[in-house]
Length: 112
Length: 111
Image 1 (tube, rainbow over the protein chains, first blue to last red):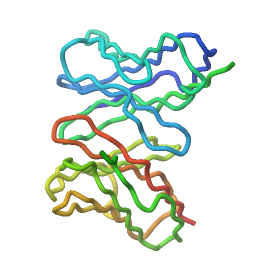
Image 2: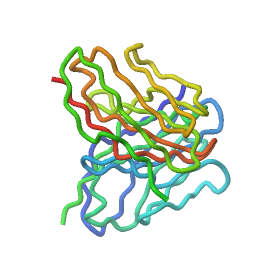
Image 3: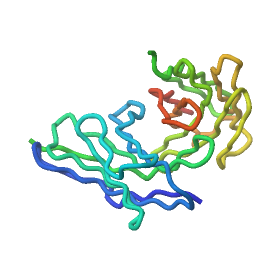
């Protein structure tokens, strides 16, 4: 069975500081991994994805993530956070037939 | 290219009623999947359709059903609504074996 754990429920970061969101997954085969962001009252926007190849993937809005098979992790990073990055972030692992299993999400608060 | 479109965006229903939600996928996408999002359970997979066939189903009761039409548009139906069905229902579309794109969702409140 596939599953995702996001250990941090809530993170507060100062504007301009770096951000790292943790994600650990469980999946029997080579995983498809995604990070999505959700602003209040909105749907999910794809930030980035990993299917294969280079383990460091670049996404939109200055985000990147690194796939580490040995640690079953796919952590999301951003070097300098903007106030508009305040949102909820979801890590997901993809199985067959476009079925995604999501983590519980991490809420990011950005303080001035 | 237009994104995934879901209608209605907001609706209120009474316990025992049924509801139908509609989803228009991104043009060219043949796979449509549905998810339920609640504060308590998070994001949960409901089912996925491809070329009018349900290929995968999550762990939801039979009150939750869906279908896909020949133009890839999809509907999901929930019968005999319960208070616990109040949620954001998200539709997503994908070209086969590729990235999954979500719509803005339909907010269902059951009173």
